Image 1 (cartoon, rainbow, N blue to C red):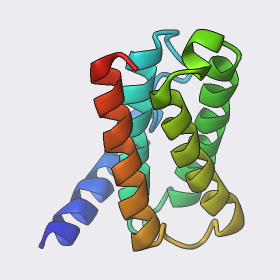
Image 2: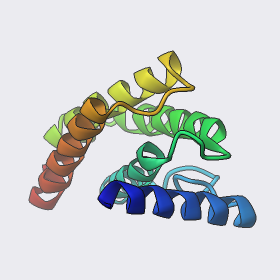
Image 3: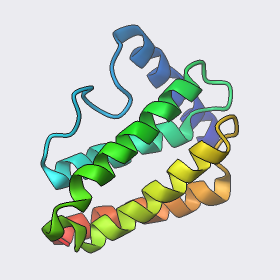
Image 4: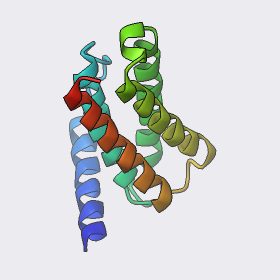
Length: 134
């Protein structure tokens, strides 16, 4: 039942995004510059992207947008040594690399359950580290 509700929610979100022209990951002009805020927004958006059903109408487009946002996020924050040394950033980069790799290698396949579980664990670790300020 939970999987079904997740799929229904994802389809509804795709419909809203399609109708309003909103980006799936945040503002189209990029990141805010606030690392913690951008990281939480990225996690929330990637959770939505990961939950998209196989037959979502804009799945490939949203995955390509997610890959671009992943690149933008990594490019912006890896240059800041204060942020690049945080445990939350290291864990986030691990999750982002895994998801980007899947999207690049298997664009027509849904994210496997094993990878979804791993990503969710890493996202929770990042959120906990951000609450600690790490």
